[in-house]
Length: 106
Image (cartoon, rainbow, N blue to C red):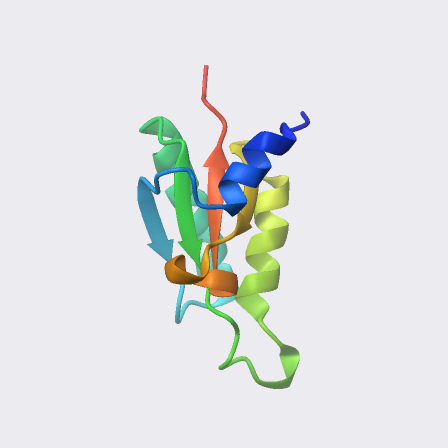
């Protein structure tokens, strides 16, 4: 499924209302994966269309780099409910957060 360019542009520009948010700060990668999966299932069940996932910028990760940031990106790419995602606007967390468009369930 290709997402129209106008939709992606709108997402990057913050034109979609954030209907819920998940903050993953302080969680391990395993904990974050489980919490994210449950959050996306709940958001989909509630028929939300846009959510924000705060993963942080990895400043506490040391030489390994931003563990959650990389992991969340990978998990969202593989999740069936995710239509598209983009880094949040600076006022919404910038590169430490993602705005996620969800697919409408049938």
